[in-house]
Amino acid sequence: MLRDRPRLVLVSIIGGVGLAILSFWALRIDTPDVALGPQQHVATSNLKMGIHTRLTDEVEQWKIKQSLAMVREMGAPWIVEYFPWAYIEHQPGHYNWTHADQVVEHAARQGLTIIARLGFVPEWARPAETTPLYLDKEHFADFGRFAALFAERYAGKVDFLILWNEPNLAMEWGYAAPDAAKYTELLRTAYPLIKAANPAVQILAGALAPTLEPEGSEFGVNDLIFLQEMYDAGAGDYFDILAIHAYGWHFDPDSPPHPEVINFRRSELLREIMVRNGDGHKQAIITEGGWNDHPRWTRAVRPAHRIGYTLRAYEIAQREWDWLSALCLWVFRFPWEQNSYQDYYTFVSTDFEPKPIYEEVQRYARGTAP
Image (cartoon, rainbow, N blue to C red; front, side):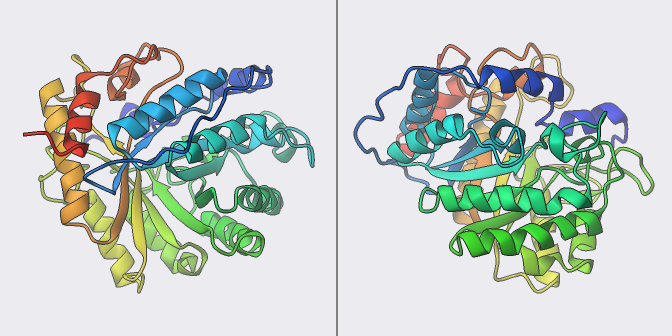
């Protein structure tokens, strides 16, 4: 068990607030239109395969298309993509949907199912000197209205929305103390607004960071505890699907779950909490997860192990977990090199060179892997 601050930072995969702020301006640069091309369909042996695409800061439209085409060719029907509120509604009531439209249209044309993650607060909706991950109760309705507009705009093209990311971490909660009751209030506010705009859209809640933080930690709340606290606050009435983050660290995917261990099958403990609270009829989706093959990171595995673990995880999702709709691993590609351990989560390099893991997953999806 590791209970230090660096581990929490590593678990919180979607970081880099300062970089994202700079990227906001980059996304406002006009880029030439790229033809969508003919309608495509994903051919795969496993309909639960998914990947996190991370096109948020990709400003060149041809690269958006190329990324999504390679996801389809890999055989993954599902993608998770981040649509930051601040990038779209940079002033109250003024919207720039250009980049979001590009991602949604190209993904739809490639035959991919989109799970849209919403968050990242514009300056006008938060106090000065707070991070874009800070949202107070006074602006819950503003976020809900934005999410409702998103759901209405992309009705029939985006059927799944994640509300927020890793709210059990202080860093992802704007460095305020993580509070399951407050997060539940956000769900309670946004859920009816979204459903009124698009009754068919499915709302994902949770997306909790797997962490073993002890009680009273300033950095976060244990994900198992936080989920039960959400149910205690009444969250069960305000989401349709639970979003789960499932990182394997150095454990193989068949390592048994335990409350004091972070591994892939920790997902089963979250599922048990759902069942105990009367939500056994609901599905879950793993919206982040997987293994890292950095040569010098203590939580990484060898590249060959990463490939084997990844294929086995997709098999577990397909054959053992009937309560799981999709397994979307982190991360397909970054727009630029991260120059950190993060680069060793990718399936494809920034210049679109497929890594061995991409090729082996593709063989698996085509039914030709040994």
